[in-house]
Image (cartoon, rainbow, N blue to C red; front, side):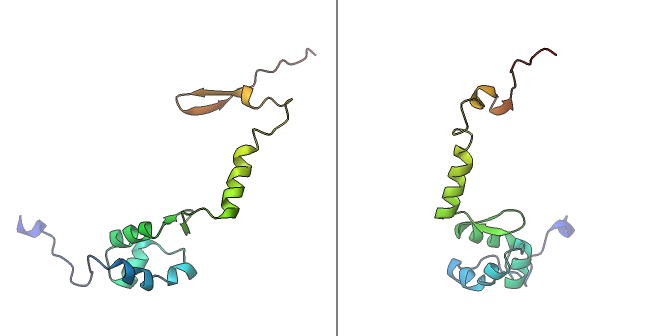
Length: 117
């Protein structure tokens, strides 16, 4: 059973101060495509530490890129435009009347009468 015990690595730190991490990761702004594992290797820390500190900084990995979770004015306006577009459609479209909700899923439903040919 002694051979199954994992020896702690001497070249990897288990923790790093948040302030030190922020100053060390200034390169993330230029190279936001790096993974937590790559950043952890550069800083000689554990990758879970990098992920935790990035989360504390308000960063999230979206489409292989680290982006801020905070909404600025342009993102808020864009989100408003996208969400309100179906509500402002013309009355003839009847968009909301064609949506059936079931078990938290939205299912488009088209019940328009078709003219006979």
